[in-house]
Length: 127
Image (cartoon, rainbow, N blue to C red; front, side, top):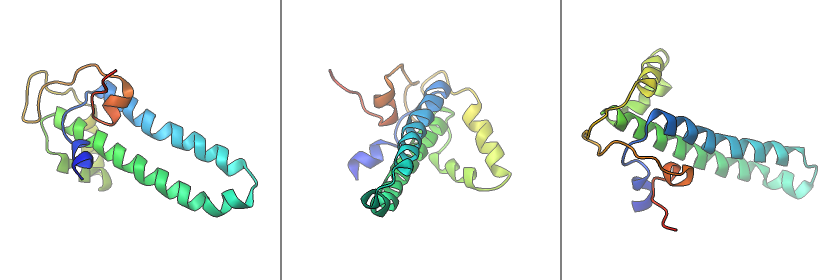
């Protein structure tokens, strides 16, 4: 659980958020489209399991990016619940697209430039 909670700490700016969402959603979509075209009984049997695992991981990483984007605007991650409420989701979209705090806020220092993997998984990768 320690590693999962680390996904929700810190901040990401607008550009990092958009790149992160693309990085989280495109590869599974392409992979699933490719797998769906195969006509193999074994693949057809395990396809629902593969879809479930990919959806759970993509959903978790997407929520993590959303919470860290809200942190950049100095708002609690609980605001992510607004994304699931009709009409309130427009306010959530506004929060996601507005400019973040330029200075240190309650959730840490302003985000720095990082590679896409360390940004999505919220860890610094040492070479």
